[in-house]
Amino acid sequence: QVQLMESGGGLVQAGGSLTLSCAASGNILAPNVMGWYRQAPGNERELVAVMTSSNNTDYAESVKGRFTVSRDNAKKMVYLQMNSLKAEDTAVYHCNYNVMGRKYWGKGTLVTVSS
Image 1: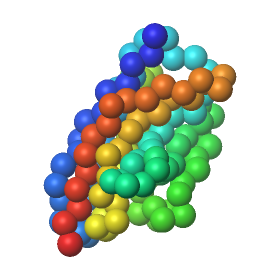
Image 2 (image 1 turned 180 degrees about the vertical axis):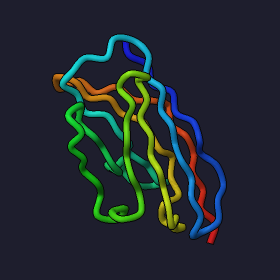
Image 3 (image 1 turned 135 degrees about the vertical axis):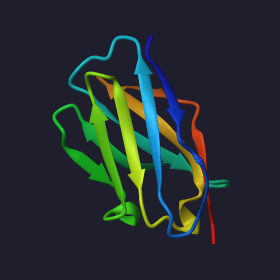
Image 4 (image 1 turned 90 degrees about the vertical axis):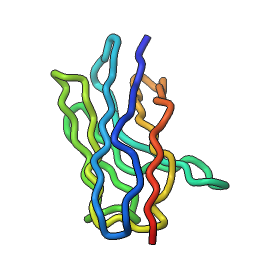
């Protein structure tokens, strides 16, 4: 069973930066996709940034140029570097692991951006 644990969330002022980390445990298979989704109050969960095991990336339009996803496969870690944060980035950020059509989720870490 795969488990995901996020860390790094918190309160930051608009224009600031945060780095989220996700530690995966269990048997991580390849090929896979790992990355980040977010859910703001009253909204549906949405893709933020993901990276395949062959290092291809996909970003939401709203974060392109500001956020960077990366991963360390040897350590089973996924990261999200968030720069130039905006109030609308406020959400619970969830780590995701997708393999052979099955999705695993972390419980999430709250990011609050004050304007």
